[in-house]
Length: 80
Image (cartoon, rainbow, N blue to C red; front, top):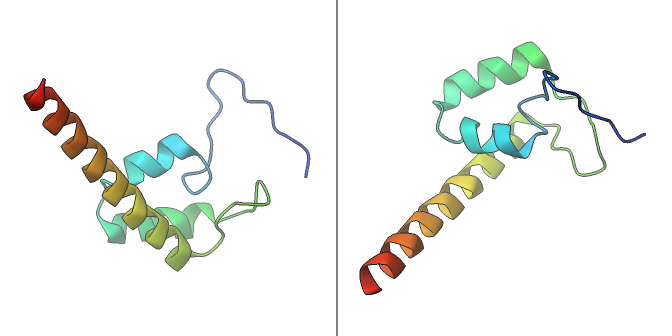
């Protein structure tokens, strides 16, 4: 695999871009499944998730991290 060079306006697949994972974590699971089935899950790097179940597990992890981050920021802000 050779590295890709993104240009302005390029579109990364939902399953392989960090920003897309963050956004997808807040979309209903059935809609995410539909998108993945339509787009496919082509490997773009050695670490690309290529199964729907694996991707949904990753979204669950992203949600947990987002919740922890939000809670920690709130706690810190209140404590300050």
